[in-house]
Image (cartoon, rainbow, N blue to C red):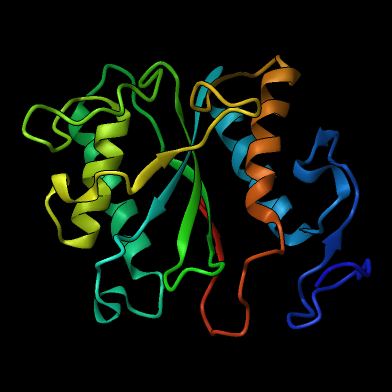
Length: 228
C-alpha cells in the first residue's frame, strides 16, 4: 500500500507522512522503511516532553489492550468509548494508590486492526517515577484475577472495568510491550538530562504513529494523546 513515498495519506489528506529515520533529533521506529504520520509524531513528542518537563524522572510503560475473542460485536461498539472508560478507571486506580508523590497520567494510544475481526490498542503511558517506578508482576493473583498493587494489575483492572468484566476475564488481554531485543517488558526510567533514555522511549512510541494497519474511513479516531 505504501511502496510509493507519498507525502500525504491518500484517504486522509490532512495527515502528512515522513519517511525519515528521525524526528526532532530522536530515532524513529522502522528506520524510514514504513511511513509514519507527522501529525501523530508531533503529538507524541509533546506528550513525552510535557512529562519530562514536569518530573526529573518519568516512568514510561508500553502495553497493548485487546478484546476477548468471544466478546460479541454488539458490546464492542464502533467507537473508542471503551478507551475513554479505560482511561477514567486507570486514573481512579492511580488516585486510589495514594502514593507519597502525585502524578499526572499522560498517554499516547492508537487503534489498529489487521486481519482480526476486532481492533486492538497500543499504549504508551508516562508517570512520575517517584510515584510509580515499574510495571510489576504480570502474573494473576491466587484467585485468577489481578488484585495486587502494581501498575500491571491496575491497568488490567481498569481494562476489565471498561469492558464490564471481572479482572479474571482479561487474562492475556493486557500485553506489555517487549523491549527491542525481546526478553524483559519495556519499562523505562526517563531522565530529564539523559537523551538516550528519552530516545529509547520515543522509538517505542513512534511505532504508534505508523500509517499501516489503521483502517481510516470508518468515521472514528485512530490516535489519541492526553491533553495536559
